[in-house]
Image (cartoon, rainbow, N blue to C red):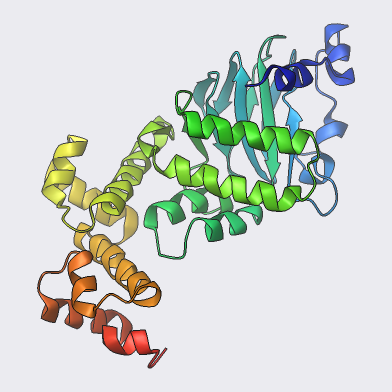
Length: 321
């Protein structure tokens, strides 16, 4: 990260100076409204803003707390230690920790050289990110973004170990710089940059950790990624071998976690990609069926009609939609 950004983030704040002079606890009034220890976006975001940034406060222990927003922590330099839902996480330089509103987080004191930035993000900010990430249905993308936007997901955090991925580092630096310097048109810039960031993160879901308590959800992320990459010719046996899983146990896990079997997930992706190609290309229906993995055109027509109630040709013409 550029030296001038590190210098800006390293400045001792008034709050931090109080800790250096002997204060031992956070001032709750800075962060929360009411008695419960829930970090309040109303305290940390300007009115009308969907995203903001602040340097992580050093030299003090943050007791277990929740947030009424999505928090994204980027480690610019050094390390910070966290406990999130009983999992201990050491966030290393260049890594990214994303917490949804379910997360219970505790943070150990950071030293002067441990420089992190906290992104305060309202869940609706990710609506634009989803739009940026493309029109065709993407189960992996929707699962990841859903983890951030929904209270219902079992996952409470995503720890991306991506310090060596240059495009991700560049995009995060761009976000930090734009928000620190109040760049004109920054809302559009930030939404586009966040969309690009998540497009990159989707390529590195093998680098994401979600905690020992949710190991199966981590496996599910890899299942979705495999389907996104291999929907034309992927197989459950190949996936099981790649994940070092017994095929029977993997099949049962997929059904239990998603309510669908592997073939149904694969077919859902193939048909959504077929719809995308019907709407955005002039390829023939036969070519589209072949491109999404169906060599038998009659079978492609049959399952498409079962799903949408009309044939691919009728769909392209807009009939019945």
